[in-house]
Image (cartoon, rainbow, N blue to C red; front, side, top):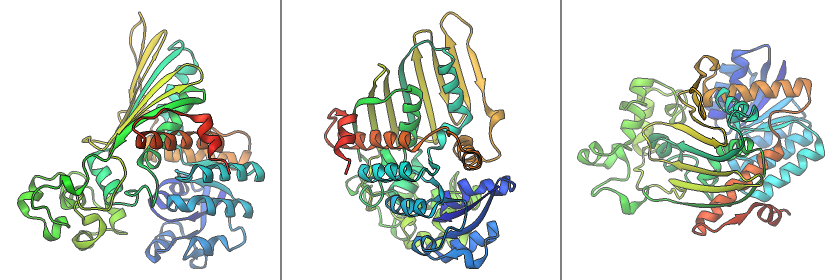
Length: 427
């Protein structure tokens, strides 16, 4: 068993990686944590039995202590990660660092250098590598069942309500405050595409933009807050109405209780607390009158050193949250849907082969079992050493791909050479 401190007790800190200790208490024990919100520290005590004197009011307070655990989970906001991680490495912690590492490539490279200097185990939260779904795709490729890979076509459909919650009203709405959406949401996808291609990305180009969630697209008469001043007739036609999303709709409190996203709006949500928070709080705002600037759709075109071509598309405009993939090779093709946990392999001239992976789902459902898979692999890495499934080097490369894609899109599709782009950002 390893001991863990949590720096940042939000959804990822409390409910993702650390929850492994509740499922497999013989593997992990949470012994300390920090958050600026007293109610989150109270939840840390109640959920994991952490003593009050091991709960700290800020990352600074936690990292001012001597080493308190074997490892640390860093799950604060994007621009805090590198400074916290470097201090934690200096104290001797092994790390799970939530993605993205940083929206600044120079900061990602700085952490990469520190990891090599200290020799500590650091795993970035690219959880999709750890899902049964993508591991099976990787096995199919490695076993040669598709022949030589020619193209990879991947999509991430964010879901209209998820995008409104996280990228319009929520913490990741501003590229300046956090990260561009292609990094904050899709560095997962850049990571697994690079992993499946098994070759460096040579060049890429990208197109995207913020097309919908701005004042110019607001319905006539729309108010600033859905439940406070927006007319009923406008709200009735709006799928992004905060009352629908958080209270009455298919994902709202009335049907799903205090699960995500309600537990992000308020800690330990009740209907009364949610109604109050939505009157004039950030999650009650009209999606057309927020301070958001991240893209709501984007496409990336990539070329890899081994000749593989890849495309990736992300969009806010889908009913459900799901990822799909199609891979073509010289001897067959593969299609799959992560949320359905199914992969269809079609070798040319042979019968179709369906991989149904639903039976392999973890007790821990986050990201198709990837949250638990990463945490479990991290425990093994800390206890036994050796090589993990991924590395900080691989994670930094995928961050460079995402940040270059954002820069390309801002430049209306300018092609960027990855090697030159990375070298230009080294301090």
